[in-house]
Amino acid sequence: MADQRIATSKVAGTWAWFFQRLSAVLLVILLAAHIIAAHYWHVGEEISVDTVNERLKNVAFIAIDYSMLAMVLLHGLNGTRTVLFDFDMFIKRRKAVDMGLWILGIATMIWGIIILWPFISG
Amino acid sequence: MKIRDFKWLFGRNSEFWPTNMKTGMWAWVGHRLTGIILVVYVFMHLSFLTQASLSHEKFDSLMQVTAQPAFVFMDFMLVCAVIYHAMNGFRVVLFDMGVGIRKQKLVFWIMMAIAAVLVAVGFWLLFDAGLFNGEWF
Image (cartoon, rainbow over all chains, first blue to last red; front, side, top):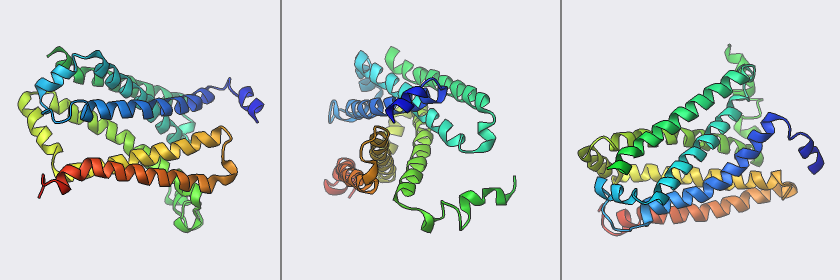
């Protein structure tokens, strides 16, 4: 069984499959970090623009938020790709679907980076 | 595209008709549904944060909204979806590694038991202040 899997690893879809598992494990860790950082780091502190600005002076918060978003987009849009490819009409247009999802993912990543920017620079 | 093209999906003889589905199929359908919900949520989350980043006043008024009971209930639904997706995803990873396939139903229910405990913890964290410590009543 294991040998057969290694033999198929040159197919592009196998990388998508493997990455989906890898990003899943990373997301569980990052999600825990994201929740703790956002809600339990300074319990009782009033949440305002000023306190968020203060927190985002810490590079760890920025790293958690941005890597979380990158992983979420890769995992979520790769999952969307899997769902779409269960329909004939999309698997016939595999390249267009892949390209569309990459563009959506990169655009959303840029959007996410821009959202935090006023807080980081403020 | 005609309605009968979707008989495989909605028909009484399709694999997805509720009485035709077994444990593994329910798990798969649940994984799909929660997955799609979570992708949609990410975009809602970014839209929300975009509005919150516009001005101090907008930020403060949106933070008020997040403390509303209805909003916290939506948070709880989100927590349930994430926990189900994560625990079932863990089951999928186990099967990919060849662990527990022959006991797949048992593995599903073990995962759901862990999920139930995590959901209970999530419920307590989200609702403790509002329901039991007088924040809402």
